[in-house]
Length: 352
Ligand code: NAD
Image 1: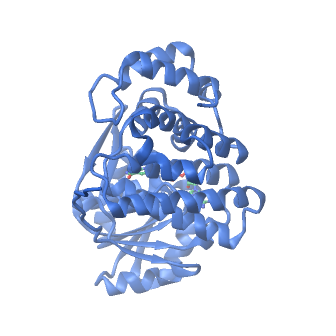
Image 2: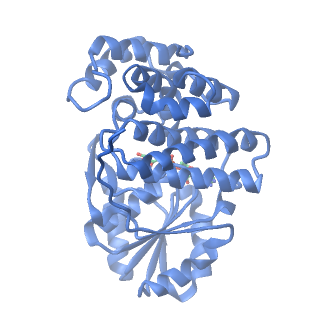
């Protein structure tokens, strides 16, 4: 087989291990920073305040206003605090929403970001920022957006609720599945995607039974790093576009939408990308769509778009929006085929 590819490694530093949160202060100092603003959602404020205390005199404050899809007015409010406190770096403690706020601040100021992830979304290892303003979501990709340091401490995920662990895990797995057939994939992204899928295939069934299982939690966060890195390295296609459409135009929940759509988009694209998806199909011991659906059902993931209150009329509109702007996908996309795919996902039917 002849090979041709181009590969650029991510310049971010990854620190992984139980207890590694204790090293946040050390990394602030090593990076030459002295005033860290700790970011979180309102829900994780207490954890952010505790982290600021741990960091001690290197912390200059806490901003606990991060929200889903990085609203620009929240970034404006956080920027006031950055200025008032003379912060020279941010420490983002949380999931994709908090990471998004840190990225938005870095995009405006280029200050250093340290991310301490507590979900499996994977945003911490991508140079991509999705922001919302006036109900519209826009996406930017820039080197300033990629966090410089990511501290993965599996202990912070022991308490991630089981339902969120499942949907967040499937959200991460979707990055890997789409990475396998990406036009610009390379041998490293493929290795990472398959290893990430294996890590989740092993760990999520354990987590639903014992949410505090240290080995499974470590494995899942390791999978999140791998799958997130794939998302940050290669281009995504149909699956991410459809989830973006559903989330953006119908306000469906982010990780849950990924969880429902993944088996269907994988089955749809397997028709054109079977060899690329063969390694993943092997992991799930079936056709890729059917195997992912069986896996999702076994771990009690949501299986139908109906559960989010979408109507069949919404599916008509979603199909039209999803094909409005052409983009690359391994299998050509048509409005009728997308409408059928959405119907299957709405009903929660097992793909063949
Ligand atoms: P989230 O960050 O919105 O978190 C959901 C809720 O769970 C929040 O209230 C949060 O505080 C709470 N939470 C987080 N970790 C917890 C824990 N360990 N225990 C208890 N509660 C916890 O959800 P998410 O799915 O991580 O992120 C979704 C957002 O990330 C979306 O806006 C999405 O667009 C974005 N995202 C961006 C990228 C990218 O590369 N730009 C990649 C993936 C996701």
